[in-house]
Image (cartoon, rainbow, N blue to C red):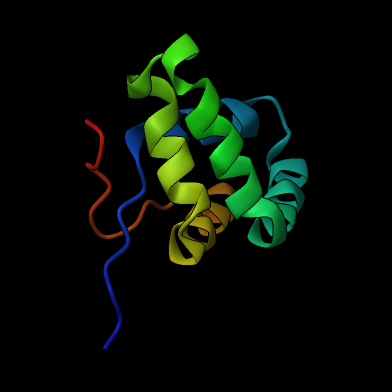
Length: 90
């Protein structure tokens, strides 16, 4: 059974900004790299969250730890179609 993946609104906004600037392909490659280094990146984000605010960085850090969320982000960057429930973090 396939699990519904929620793409945080923060990530969707960032993805929209990247796609609007023509950087969607570059961001897709970055997402592929994050599949390997996502845990390390998420831990760095958790360490700096108190400096920049949990509302901004916490959803990103959580998504970096979830391979299904990274796949959903890559699909959103490629197609502009959010997951089934894209209201997480709203």
